[in-house]
Image 1 (cartoon, one colour):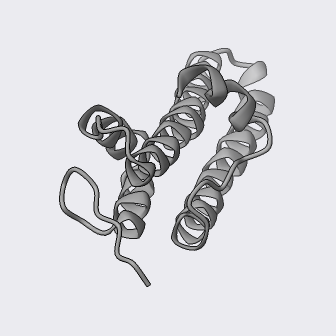
Image 2: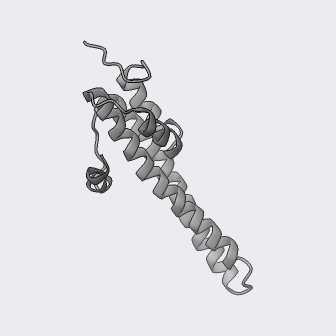
Length: 127
């Protein structure tokens, strides 16, 4: 098995996993660092861009729902319904993020260009 290295000198598999390790932040860093046009760098850039788009979107959704929950929590009658409903939505988003994070790191180890169904359509314009 040929070991393919990237700009950082790490194995390509390790760097693909690092793209997901700290969510969108590590994806953004690797997207900026990997500039070569080799096959291994393209695979790392694909996973990094997928990490930025996926976890960035989920982070913004959780931030928006949290702010909305905090604002509507002050309304006396609505606070019971909104705290329950938006709290449940926040928990669902959090668990989705956690499971997707684990899944994407496993898939990054096994497949160089694993594509999420809806995210990959948007990434074609970025990469």
